[in-house]
Image 1 (cartoon, helix red, strand yellow):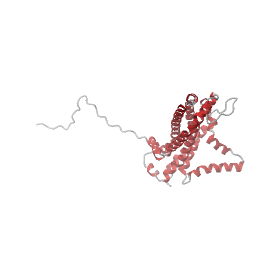
Image 2: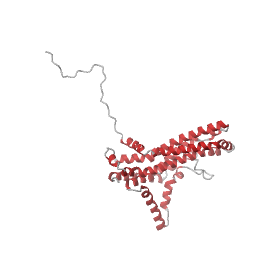
Image 3: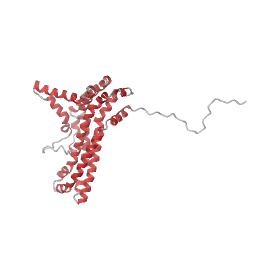
Image 4: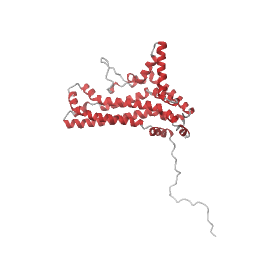
Length: 315
């Protein structure tokens, strides 16, 4: 009498073993950053819109380019490079200013917006810590916006160079002068260095705005600005000094003096619109006490923003 066996038959020899499918680990910080970009399209739309306007204006200005290049060809070599670099440097400065504005308004709304539309209740239900959420918002002005500005500027400058070359070739002007004397790659390296310096120097500003965004119930911009103005006015009335105002002024625009050697021995001040690569001073910048004090203050503000988000209720 044959009986059926309940034993599982052995797998054939040589057959590959079936391994369990490994589930991918969740990446809450990565997806939190992606969420910020999905929900705040102005982070990349604003620089692209400015770049489009600049490109249109540059295309119109190409009408007078051949005459300008012929005039530049008779000048000193150093002056030629500076004159040819000015339009490209001005465009870079405009995009950098756009990036700063985008970072400021993003930080003011980053934590305030989710409380205003009550989406904070949904995001708190997910297994994502407040620290991860705040850091994912802080990385936007610290890293993502500068990276977008750099890539946009580099692409725009190359398009402008190609357009200028086409016009010069069509008119028989000095296209060789443009390619030989325009320090475009040098300018882009200086731009990358400047964006890193700017992000580090403005870190306490962005962290302060994030803190106010998580605390204020309304009018976050006023709550961010008015206390600083009130402190400056109080100091002036009470002590007839302006140390706090000077500190704020240096924190906004003082990075240039700390990060670049704008004065050469025996010469006057250089044009800040075009800074040669030889004048960057990373050692001087890293040895500035204000840099590390600002980063320490930024860390404190971010820690307070994390704690605020943990206990603040929707508006």
